Length: 335
Ligand code: TYM
Image (cartoon, rainbow, N blue to C red; front, side, top):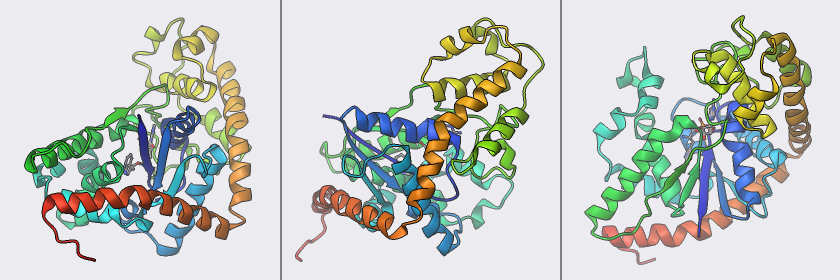
């Protein structure tokens, strides 16, 4: 049977990219009746400096976003990473299996250190993908839904599992399948269709945040960069039009229609016609989530209780795996 694991960093508010590329699909997997484990990866977040009180707040806010979007903490396991110590324990063992060169090759590491002195970034930032492999393999997850940008990290998780299995001469960890499907797996910036929509972009107009109100959403879509051509008659016509393609993709992701269906619906339309429709759709889909998030955030103790309960359930799965891993590696367990 399938077991799904995925994670989101609570380092800043969630964006429409996180929603379409991850959260919305997490809910779909849960509703298909598959076993689903979702993690707010606070240990990953601190690979770059986080203000402690903000980190706590953002972790709660991310948990509220999950629940508001439809994650049911009884059906899915929802928790923050640092409460299950197996993540850090397995990550250390993987740090000794993985090679430094593998880490230097990660495009995300290169991007995050671009223009800076990489020698001065945290050691954790370099080892980031090793912790990510630990997240997944601690539960022997079979499938990991993510956005396009995490593909290389998941390939590395497969390499680490394979090397561990090889080094210790047994098939212990599964070779996990990335699940990158649908129109929302690569949502681009609203101000530059060639750049990923990201919570770290300095321009707030480049993204839609799950905390934006209806006015802000409508305004950002109205201002989104486009070219001056009408929308094409077929999806082929989006090829060299990154901004138009992005808005069509977002419409498809939010509506659940295919890109072809959206293109057919708006064939030949001007952006002046299409953008208000997109704004209405975005507000209709996102506003109820924002409202529910705000309601949940009024009771932080309840959110902490849900995360604690989730962590207990996660730990019950993780403990035997970390114990067996230690046995395989040759560590004494006598307490
Ligand atoms: P993070 O926090 O950057 O993003 C969380 C999820 O959102 C997706 N995503 C996007 N999808 C489409 N378009 C975008 N513009 C966009 N921006 C972000 C990401 O692909 C991701 O699925 N390393 C991970 C967190 C992580 C993890 C894991 C994921 C830690 N351990 C284990 C899976 C399994 C990260 O930084 O995601």
